[in-house]
Image 1 (cartoon, one colour):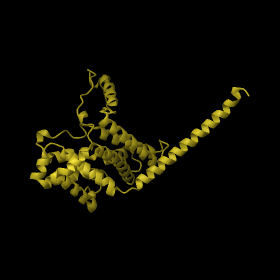
Image 2 (cartoon, helix red, strand yellow):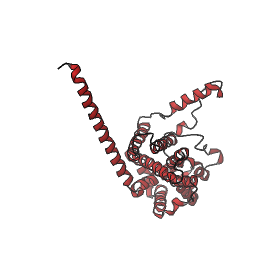
Image 3 (tube, one colour):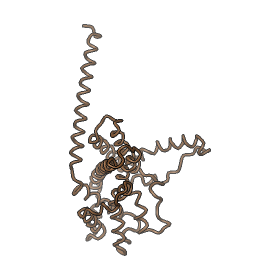
Length: 292
């Protein structure tokens, strides 16, 4: 038969094949997300979070001196950063901010890893953290935890504000980037006032931007603007966040959000906000590769 006679049938076959493949992919992503949500935070996620947070804080200026001179102050700052997501989320939802400290297992785990990182014999725990393959592995686990934490805080906000999309986005994002918002509190314990960095809302890092984007994705799914389940989205955003973070660390890639920020600033400045139409300085961009 002529080629034109076969065209509708081949198109129909390919269309059905594409739909079948897409359906299979979505089901696989949904199952993977459901499995991921079924993994308890303790021991894997929380243990890695406490270890990486303590080691990251110890790398900061004045952290070791504070831990040896004022261990309780150092421990307090460490616990604040470890539980930052729960503290700020509960505050935003009108709940007791100290609720995260009610989990004795989580608190003792954070205290234990703080002690190991600062006071282990021969400093072996901090040396262990510096092993690159281990850091990359922990990065994958931490960023997966971050995406799941954003989803959990988003679901918690749904119980209070089911139809307020702006609040849902903000509360969900706080679950992923609260450590940066409370960093100035921790820095006030170990640095002079002149050395304390600007608050997170003045130097927005990559992790903060990514947290708001991921929370916006969950919000769009809730309002049925995206044809995907929350479980499938969790796998997709986790994969993207892990990939981008590793690319920034291994290949030295810049913040992928920076071109968007520059373009936005050019539009705003050329519209009359700034007569020179200059792009803003890279205030805080150097910290984009640091993890919350």
